[in-house]
View 1 (tube, rainbow, N blue to C red):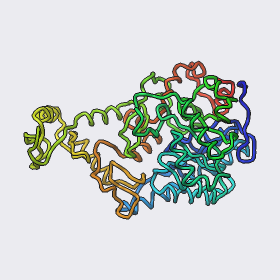
View 2: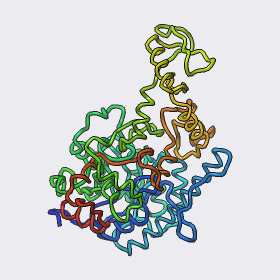
View 3: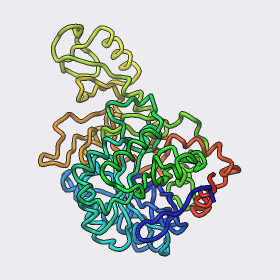
View 4: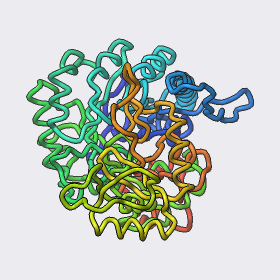
Length: 467
């Protein structure tokens, strides 16, 4: 056992202070989270459009039959609740009463509050806590407390936690089980970088976590309430100075990327194989997500195509003004757009390479795409089912008008479509493939040599040694 690491009290029992990161669409399910809990840790079921099963045990494809977005949104919520309930029940059975089962929700997912109510109502006594990030989940404490369930907000700064605490969490302090600090430069998936922070200048997490603990103390929160370090966690020995450190109080650790490569992990084999060959720098912190957040994913063909699409972009005016004195004569069919001379030449060059369609963005720019790309973009936008509280790609918003009031952005993509596809066997190079920035360590860590893929129990035992 790694020096200084001791069990913590959580949900009325002793558990190891190691948590399986929850991730998004179906990438952690009952098999991985139940096994993590059975090994004495805290397993996390993803309650983000989780899978349901038919009577033969086959995954039910999430097909949308309604004609309107509002009706498809109702289908989405029904799928989400049914799937998460099924996953929690199965995980709870696998855990055998050991460890604990959490669920993970994204506050910015469509219908988040309704999904959370629906799942907790039907899984009483099975869920120990709810982790929640991707936004400012003010109502998380109120909802969790109403079901007698712990809540573990995910934040990336002391400032974010302070706002949540003052506005809401202080009223349900007894159900605050931990605060997850997610490193916005190193974690996989959506990241909480603020506009004041430089995505290319990572900050040392220690001072940021120390500031978070000081903020928690100012709120009267005990040092026994753990801060969970998430993002960039691989070997516990790397965090030796954090354990039993009076400046930081109780610390726990969340593992998001390592549990992807286990026998119980539900991700397809091609995804697992890809993880074993990644090099440093292969995970890109980018801003193409329709949520508007930064996010980290493997820089595969899918991300490269989005990067290239954004580079094929020019600014325009609706009338000749300033440097925009040249009427665009490619890609726009009968509409008047005025551009600079340099951009006119670039647009003609892209047109000659087959990028013959110019699509408007909300920022008064045009991006040039092929006819096939345009058809996919338009179809995906039309098929929107409101999987986010607001979506830049389709302009859906969970409000009275079901609209963000902004033009749909063709530089983004349908996140629901690509995440459902990759986790159910679609090609890993042509879909969004979330991963943390330490994923290259699969290739370097001797534990995985000769193609070894551990069970969750073997991984947990290994982590507890410090390696």
